Amino acid sequence: MSRRLIQGNEACVEGALAAGARFFAGYPITPSTEIAELMAERLPVAGGVFMQMEDEIASIAAIIGASIAGTKAMTATSGPGFSLMQENLGFAAMTEVPIVVVNVTRGGPSTGTPTKPSQGDFMQARWGCHGDHPIIVLAPSSVQEVYDLTITAFNMSEKYMVPVVLLYDEVVGHLREGVELKGTAEIINRDFPLVPPENYRPYATGDGLIPKLAPFGSGYRYHMSGLSHDETGFPTGNPATIENLLVRLQEKIEKNRQDIIKYKAIDVEDAEVIFLAYGSPLRSALQVQKQARARGEKVGLIQLLTLWPFPHELLTETFARNNADFIIPELSLGQLADEVSKSVPRDKITRVNRNDGALITPAQLEQALKGVMK
Amino acid sequence: MNYKDLLRKDKMPHIWCPGCGHGMVLSSFLRALAKREYHPDKVAVISGIGCSSRASGYLNFNTLHTTHGRAIPFATGIKMAKPELKVVVLTGDGDSAAIGGNHLIHAARRNIELTVIVFNNNIYGMTSGQYSPLTPHMRLATTAPYGNIDYPFDLVKLAEGAGASFVARGATAQPRHLEKIIGQGLDHNGFSLIEVITQCPTYFGRKNRMGSAVDMLQWQRDNTSTTGKEGKIPLGIFVQEERPEYCANYHHLVKTVAEGKGSE
Image (cartoon, rainbow over all chains, first blue to last red; front, top):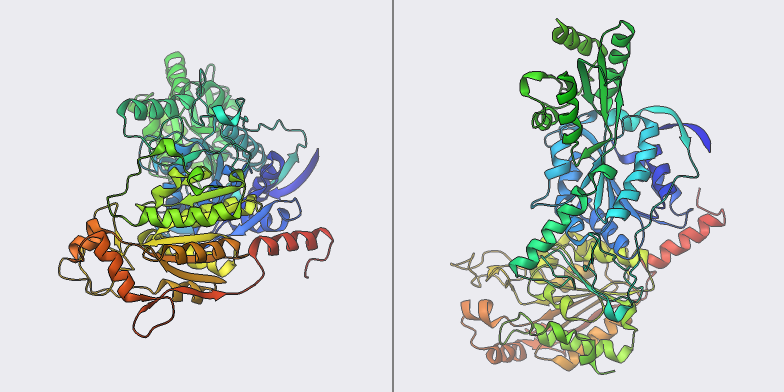
């Protein structure tokens, strides 16, 4: 174990290498570029592959290809590039190829505000590509969490054979903090088929929900397609087969929500007011919550580490128990608050929104807290 | 090895229309492949979207049917992760020259060892007959009902200009010749592109009153030349050069860095 002062984007690279990533393909884009630069330096030394591709579409295609060949693979981008990746993100979800896509978020829409933070990709990360599809989205708020959750992202992608998006804003990406680089993190690798090649059906999951996809070149020859497919991977137009596939894709995440959904709850048990946040707004919320408690006010905080699947059960239970008011600071005009309103009544939600590139300050949150408390 | 043993016969019949040339391209490819005796486990065939790209599903290798235009970068990832695999890309004129054109030129520029076979039927067949970047000027298509005012790419020149180290063109009317040039493409240590002129009697042929599949093959005979005849579409190998290959370059770089000799 070693402690180092590094940037969020550097921690992402360290986490990826610790998780076993040995392939990176990417395209330069602010504010994620440091990830590509450091990967270009580190991967050749680590026996891995770094490639700068012609665009983001090629970048995600290349990492899916590398993962199909059995190598843990990652790309990193920001909003505009993430938009370009959506079709192939859906391909990875449909074909169940594990990949990690890092989106260091900046102001949008369009070219927007490249060097400033935003959380306007909250919904795109979940619903950016067409069709019902499984996906996991993790959101670190500190440099340590970037390191830890990058490892978690690879583990979850390999365990559930699903693309995982790591979403953090520009401030978290460029922030420098002390980080423990744990050399002993638990690493999960995808399962290899148990049956011999002649009996192999890549998408036959038996009693389970997760396929065992053999790496290309390992002696198991099969077909993989983004078309709706049967258990052999071959395209089908049969409604029952299509439904089985799409329901299983959803269930493999939904039935494992408890394992996938991660959060931190601080002083929530008796809280009358709860801050709910992730990313850079969380950092301001943490300070305000701590100060309010010190004053004896019943204020708690929930930090989301998993954004999708969204932890509705947690919020429903918390609200039913506490009848608390929720203050939701976010760097968008309410994408997170709108989702929360599915489990918490709208009149119990106070929104604190910014999308001008500036941070949500503790003073802003103090004011919001005063407004709720009176 | 009989080339028919390389097919997934349980996945037949194929989806192609009667008279379509794609099966002829595929059989030429498989005959060339069978002669080379690669182990099927070590062959990966990657395709995009369109009629031609359905070919991958019928082949008993590691096969990947990707998104529209993106077969080449998927193949690039596979090749870089496992350079020992023989990686072949099957694609169409729309898939490779329109939506995937950027990937085509960049893979050519890198000189990565991929064998890219472009099934050029001058039309988008899967979506029933729209013009592609390889539809000739003033030919008809469903989206060019008064004639196509675009000018087509010369795919051979495009690939050559982009830096491909092996570039060839064949035609379904010349299946033995086609087999030969695909074989040489497979043997090539670098990026190879083989454009194949193939007939689509259902859409391109019918729209342009070119007659049956046999008539379209006769058109190919009359309008192509393997000997460079004036005024004919040339068939053959146009570029065949030994140049440093991308995976080998990367391997060399890694070795250099490991020995502490990276360029300062």
